[in-house]
Length: 435
Image (cartoon, rainbow, N blue to C red):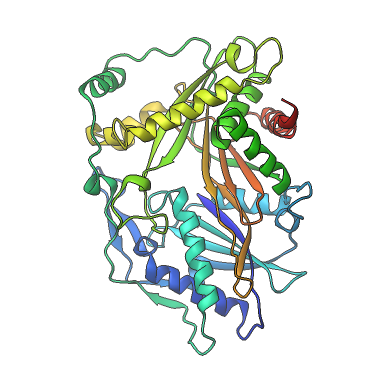
C-alpha cells in the first residue's frame, strides 16, 4: 500500500530537508509501534510480530530530485497525472521488503523548482496498516514537521518505542458469525461453489506478480460537483465509483460477460473502543461484496443507472449496520494452511472477483497558514494476485482533488483494456452534471 503527500512547509528553513524528514520520521516511529514491528516465522502457520530494537533511517528513507506534475496542478484546473511519479509508485509496488528490515519505507521527492515543497511516498506492508493507517502516518508526520525544534539533534538510528502493539480487532470487538453464514461459507469452501454464469474476472490466477499502475486525478471543482450530485441522487461517491467502474468495464468486455463482482473495504474503527481511532496505525478493516449485472448497469436506453448507485450505497450501509458481524475476515480462524488454502491452491484457477473500489475518504486540509500543510494525496495498492483483477484506490487530498490509482497484474488484464476503462470513467464523471 502506498500513500503520497505533497507538503508545503512555511517560514524560514533552519535545518536541511533531510533533518526535517528524519526528525518527523522519528516522531512517527515513537508514536506508532507498528512502524517498528516485523513478522517472524511468516513461512509457518503461526507467524507473529516481533519488535526491531532500532530503525536505521538511512536504510528506509531515500531522496531524489523531482520535477512535479500532478500535484503542482491548480486545483480548479484539469489535472494531468505525473508519469514519473506513476513510474515511481509502480516500482515501489514491485519492490519487496527485505527480511529483518522495517515493513515500510519513505521515498522523498525533492522539488527542484520550489525548495519549500517536497513529496513523501510512504510505502508500507498491509500487515502493519490499512488504508486509514496511511492517512494517520501523514497526519503524524505533518504535526511533527510543525513542531520541530531546530536545536534538537537529528538522529539516523531511532530506538524503537516500548509501546505495545494496539490490539487486533478480535480482542476488542465481538466479531460474531451466524450459523447460517458460517455453514454457507464452509460448504462453499470445502464442498462446492458454483461460479456465476457470465462472470468476468480477468485471466486465471498466475504467479509471479508484477503490478502496473495508472494515476487518474480529478479537479477540485469537478469533485465538488460530483459530491453535490451524489447527495441529490441519494448516494455516495464510493457507491458511484463502484457503479461507474462496472459500467465502464461492461462497455469494454465481450457481451457474453453479464456479471461483475466488486469488493470494497470498510474501516471498522467507528465501532471500536477509544484506544483505536483514525489516528492509529494497524489493521481494522473488513470487506464487502456487490454484484452488478450488465442489464442493470448499462441499460439499453443509455440512461445513467442512479438506482444501482443507490443500491450500492444501501449495501454498504447494511454491512456497516452489522458492526463487524458476518465479516469474511472472521473466517480466517477456520483456515488450516494459509499458504496452501488461500494462495497456492488457487494458482491456475479462475478468480472469483472482478474489481475492488477502496476509498479512504478525504484528508482534511490544514487551516493554519503558519504551519506546514499537505496539498495533494495519492493512495494506491499493489495488484491482487489471488483476488480482484483490477484495483481502484481513491483518496481526496487537502487540495480537494480526487485521485484514482488503478492497479492491475501484468498478464491478468490487458493494458489496452485498462486504458479504455480509465477513459470511460473520466467521461462518465465529467458528464454527471447532465445525467
